[in-house]
Image (cartoon, rainbow, N blue to C red; front, side):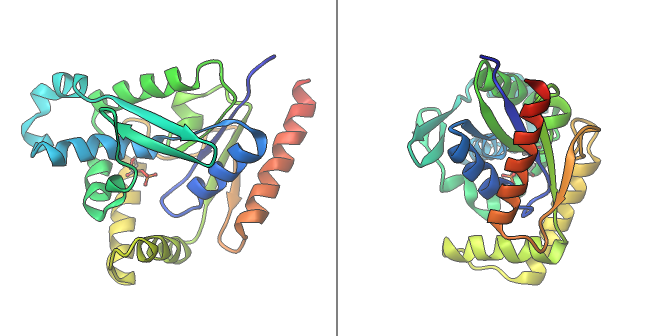
Length: 227
Ligand code: DC
């Protein structure tokens, strides 16, 4: 049977992770968090005291030492860096800050994109990131681009961090998010933007369940067209 891929792209705090995870669970598809992979690369640099700006010549060989995989169990997907689960270590503000400039480096993107295609090969997949619909899986069955007003996105991220016991404040987080979004959307390679055939969903005033229902309806409608 033909495999289906649903791509979910959008800026930080637009609801990608939560929605993608629920959708994957509902549809019994594999869930792939590609942001976690860029974060794992950033964690490797931090753990090994590597300043990427001094290592531009050595990037290829450094990347050969980085193995990223996922541990899937029935209710979660945990990212592994060189065999060790690092799911909580990659969610710190320090990693968040470094993942964005690292993700603009061609060597990093080339390596992670090929890993992502390999993971998604012959699978039913819900994947989330910045370039899923535009670059990594351009033939996906359904492409969603989530957006939300910046204050709402900051509020969601603030709640996430608070739940993890990481202190931060609204203004600081908003500034960081705006800088990161600008960088992710204006880089040369795979900038954050909707694919031409993506459906844009504004999640500002929608509940998670409403977003999930909307995407499920779009997917079912889409299946009807392709069968
Ligand atoms: O979605 P996230 O916040 O976990 O992503 C971390 C960083 O990785 C973010 O700054 C953008 C980058 N990223 C990317 O460039 N391409 C992707 N497909 C996913 C994430």
